[in-house]
Length: 531
Ligand code: GDP
Image 1 (cartoon, helix red, strand yellow):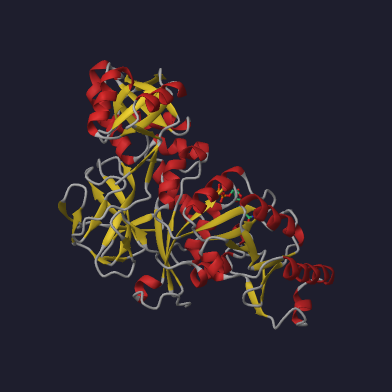
Image 2 (cartoon, rainbow, N blue to C red):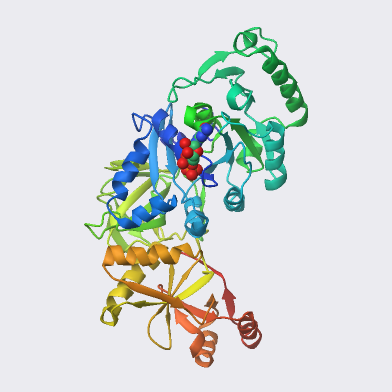
């Protein structure tokens, strides 16, 4: 095991917490499944989907997710891989859920970017990559579907370098492609990996090679492919940078593996790469100070809240990233926002598609804490220190609609449902100062449909979304008297969000400019830190 930080307790140093990002259809689900398979978390490929479907039948909302082929809910999966402990945090795939995805990426230390060898960098790849870049996350790249006709390898690498402005260092080099795809040469370990087309779940045969002149190459690679391969490797060594771990950890370079997730090819090498080169749990930033993973006291933050995971119980699970220390079940932790002690007696770890009681967890791990709504996104849990973790943003919604209960008698009911979704981070809910009803804000239009469907399913409450006179929301910040002054002369534009913070609603940029001009002490912001 590469020991970059010898001071870190071994249990923490062996943890790798990461997400997989990709454009829909590139192969994220397939790759995840193979990870779980090789991590021993499932016995057979196909289980992730099978379990997923069983779960989905429990509600039509999930059915909708299935129909549309999007993954609305994110979860975390933990499994062992050799000497390492992997925590794979699932990111929702659809572009409409960028805020959720953004927050998920605040909980990981690295990302795997999956691209389709025939398609290269796609729109969603780019968006997610940009989010990773904001946080300088180290990224490993997996170029998938090499068993099909793909683009030229140099072209793919060029496209990543040009499009994403990151150096690309080949960790493996494919030999042939499509029907002629034989396997890949592992450039980091000088091994030849041969794909087994007969058994999709079998790990490739690995042959130790002494170098490119090794005669064993000819035993496994047809002569024409071997000539081409040797030429390419020579060119690659001339033109492309060598893998540099430091540059990778700083987010300037990505190693790329070529493989085929469905054929289990290249997956183990990618996992080895994550283990060997991937970052250990990284320091986390709080307003007060930086927190090192190796500190003995436990601290963590909520990056996601999921309500109604089990419709029979109105439970919520708060997903907590442990930032430091060694957590043990039953521990009493300080809930910093409410200043109250909380006994964490039923924390869950997510193993494949199952949940299991977590007896212990270490910095880097993700635990789920069932609760009745006390825990919100951005909240900190510590052994006593008042820490406020930063970098977990809330974005101003880009689309606003009014919402009404189908039955006017059920308005209170609706309020409760909306507040719940607001706390979950699924939507912004604003209560205007004047008039009745609520305004709901989302980042992508599909979220209105998802919300309507969830409110109907989970609360048996038919609702109607309708056009709103407003199209933008900005948080109002400034000294109390200045805020009061603004509110008094703009009542028709003012609302409060689910945390009680003041919001300015408008349809015109002109209004925003006017406020900025007339109220020099006021700032209107499009993001708010959740802490
Ligand atoms: P996701 O949308 O990124 O989660 O993609 P999936 O894992 O669901 O894969 C999308 C489609 O590509 C599915 O039909 C997979 O069977 C297929 N697929 C995944 N990996 C490979 C691969 O290595 N080769 C080929 N030919 N197809 C693949």
